[in-house]
Length: 350
Image (tube, rainbow, N blue to C red):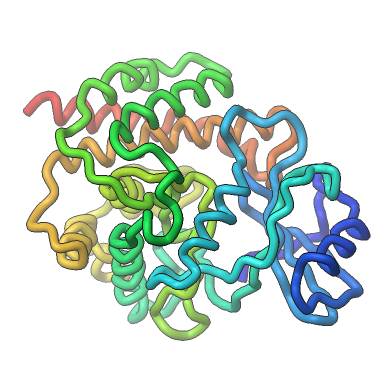
């Protein structure tokens, strides 16, 4: 279970108003209500709620001025609600509140699931002999998500089919401009390179948008996924964008992380699959023979995640980040887009 802290300064809200909302909208809820905050969750603050009737999780928008189209907790709620009876494991959704007058922002309440969340893709907390199986199930669930009939589960209007990368580049270019604090040459080059190198073909599925080890809850003892979390960036999109995102840390040294960018023999010793194994598993699970233009999907995701972490850092400067760790991201945008530009140049040199 992720670390819990008292509600941090700047994130306080009217807990009595929340208890009244839960009594009216969460079936079976009984107080008194106790609120603690999860450490992490850089985008949308997340809280553990405990009452006489059990435990719940609340996820809300952050306080302060928000970037355009960011922090859409209502989309998170809708995605998980739609996936409740599919092969994709998600928590049960209890209630969505779009009235910011209750606790100051939109929020939703969901089931609290017991399980393990690993802070890093190396999964150091897991037994070495489990890590490969944990990664294998992570890939299986991703393929299962991409196989869901989005229209049948009521998500036909969750995004616009087609032109996914063009729309994403436009969105993250705008978000980056709103959060920019310094000139980064590799980012400026990527803003031109990415839209000019989008591969042909355009398959549409439910794309999670932030599918990584840290957003997955695994069974307390078994090597299997019990909940996919953090659906803020979910939309209708290209499945290979999710896969490229999952493999980013096999291609770049992220700040504060134990790097997965190392020889296959070292990864095997640690019980962690290589990028090539992950791609092969995904192909087997999704019925693909191969994936062309693989480097594009990695470079694109490093560009996109650079824009995302720049937004986290800017919120830290503005004082409305979900975690005190936001200011540690000062150089992380540059780190990621420098690596993305190196991959792009390598691809161009072929």
